[in-house]
Amino acid sequence: MNTDKTFADLGVRAPLVDALTAGGITQPFPIQLATLPDSLAGRDVLGRGKTGSGKTLAFSIPLVSRLADARRNPSRPSGLVLAPTRELATQITATLAPLATAYDLRVTTIFGGVPQNRQVNALRSGVDIVVACPGRLEDLMRQGLISLDAVQITVIDEADHMADLGFLPGVTRILAATPNGGQRLLFSATLDNGVDKLVKRFLRDKVLHSVDEVDTPVSTMTHHVFHVDDVQAKKALVRQLASGTGRRILFMRTKHHARKLAKELTLAGIPSVDLHGNLSQPARDRNLAAFAAGDARVLVATDIAARGVHVDEVELVVHIDPPAEHKAYLHRSGRTARAGNAGDVVTLVLPEQRKDTQVLMRRAGITVSPQRVAADSAAVHALVGEVAPYRAPQPVRPPQPQRSGTPGRRRRGGRGSSTAGRRSHQRRAVRS
Image (cartoon, helix red, strand yellow):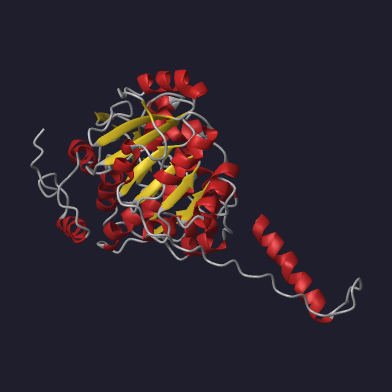
């Protein structure tokens, strides 16, 4: 394959080439080189490649190109992208939006965890492309608030993760609601857990392109396995690894421990945020934005961030708790060394975890010699580099004093019942 080809050489329209160039993207990645000639020609494509390989642009370019002259209709999109998580849906929209603007196409994002009113209003005002998570999309379909009968091109991103989360039955129902003659692009790292059945049923005369598959180590990623003597030594090592100046993501198994560590690091002068399933969608968005903007240098996350979270220039990923299986290891690690950049990955191993971690690394195709380290080891200092200056944690707002009144008595009517009504309304809004 000629790696010197430009986007224009691959058949990408001039307005899209200009939009890519404006975003600093001038050279196609291998997955784009492989898939774009077929997808732009209107063929169904099955793309196999891991996260960070450039597949979002690989499907965004043909999606916009196909719909450049589409007629906009209320609640009847012409393009559909299905994503397994809210974070991935949001990031796909961010990549897609500048390209869509080149042809005055409207994009809206649909996912759960937030009230549906704004999403419904966007649909009613007319939208060309919907980027959606299956659960909320099916909810809106059942309510008759969106129809997929005008969809010309459908994208299923990270289909294997959809399968892991149990979404394939919903994805199947959604695809069945789109026209039979529409173009379909499916991207997945693997074809297990029922993804192959999805491919056989919905992709017609497909073309398969495999680039940077999930079990292929990234050449720009350096792996380290650090053996620690006990839990206390591990805590000190985590603090040291978190102290550098660049962005880093620390992975833990449980939501509770992720929240606790982010708080501890922040109190220690290392601004950190957490990301896990217990956070509301606004809190997730706020924490990710703080991490992307550099207001927080450390993201402490569960496996919810192992896919779909793309923040530029993450220089270090730390598996504080080694994952249960090798695919999770590779997906977590894929948050660094993206798009040709270099990055380091560290796995911390207690004595009782050594045998399982050895098996994990072998299955992941990673060959690395473990090192026994402490927080002050030379290998750790070399990895951390310059230590960031201490940043005092933001003071917590003191609780507001209660209004004076007769204790133990409830007022009826007036301001008291209005407040109660507002609280009741807020509770209903949270549940909706």
